[in-house]
Image (cartoon, rainbow, N blue to C red):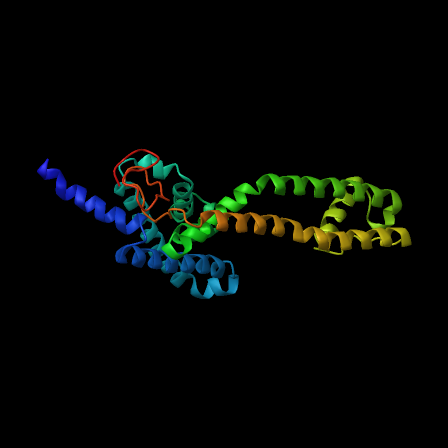
Length: 277
């Protein structure tokens, strides 16, 4: 048993650095990770500029390999640091980490796979995991609960918008002639959605007086519709903020066994697998 203690302590320290953000080393690791994610995404964007890529291709490749090797080591370290590695590997962030790291390696074995390098931009999603820092944790938890609580209302709202788009598109198809671009009901529905959401590409425009009057009504209706989902989420967010007062707050501690987060401050065991924290 004594021979296992050094290994357990080493794994525990590694777990604290990688999975938690309420320790000095954990915060430093998250800040380094944040900087490398931003650098990686910037490199992906610069590589898409042909003139810049031709001039600095070698430098971009070297930086990308440095970043990729770091993320590869981090991915392996995350697997090693928990007792149930498959919990991390099959998790959302585990899949994102793998998909965003592997393209550079694949590009050297398969011809034409360079297009997959753009997938590295998925690393940007990992910033949400880094924002588990204490000062963001409560707000992120409230926002997540607010979005979850308002999903039914938002679904009804989207369904209503689709119905309005179908109705208005069908009417415009009947009112306008083929010369105006309303050549079919699906194309007219496309116009209705673009107009109702106030995007207004301008590729299709009504020519008749009646069609222009209907378009005006759709535009005005669109301004009112934009505020609906914002109001729904804001209302639920306010409710969540009021209900959180006086409650026990969550911390950034991650389970060393299954890597589940969002434990209560007074928790001694993981709520998911029961392992000791």
